[in-house]
Length: 144
Length: 191
Ligand SMILES: [Zn+2]
Image (cartoon, rainbow over all chains, first blue to last red; front, side, top):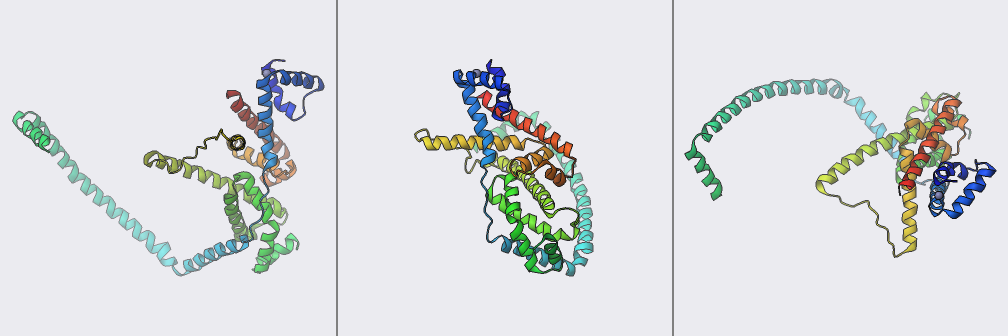
């Protein structure tokens, strides 16, 4: 049997689902081929991990912890009964108002900034054609 | 106390019944969560979540179903949701580590001077490989595979938990088994 054929049969072999004649051939191959033997061992031990998963013991504080969390949930629920007007009506109204204000404010700022940026660019292009001024800037940079 | 008594008791808001219920089922829920999560602390956290959900939604429970079926279903869903969120957290953390440097490297370097340490390392590698292979399965394959292989549930039980036909579960199991095995085989063949 070739290594490749053995590889294909190894899981069936581990599950005892190979035929008797296949078993003989695989056994013979595993005894003479170190690589396949190692592969067989690795596959078998990796699959075995499933059966070795440890059983966890229950935590004696489990119920107390659950109860604490449930109490917190219950408290929140009670609080919600007293503040529904703020939460359900006032808060969304306030938020939408802030959003609208922010939106228009943003447009306003955006507009002023946009015009300023173009001014800056035109200033720079002028500078590039002015050798003397450019030198001055370089000196300034060097000094710093 | 029978399941029916427990449920009626919890619905009547008698604390004693809920405590009894937790005591009766915590081992099952805890180990089911652990079968998905393979981490004791996470399994304990999610077990709490499962019982909280049970308490808050027990009025929706239909008595035609078995209580354990319902518990398995909640445990599987909560565990998978936790894994999904955990994945996101890990990605965010790894982005953080990329910019700010890793705090503690997860790389374990084998200690060759000690045979025991090397064996431990190899065993760890196998456990990681198996869990990774299972994690690449689709959601349904993962649930079926985990409940069958780790919890030793029958395909009939699994089909009830997952609300699927028996033949669907058989199909899922067949594909899940093949996928996991392919992953494991490829890993060792590349070595
Ligand atoms: Zn070989």
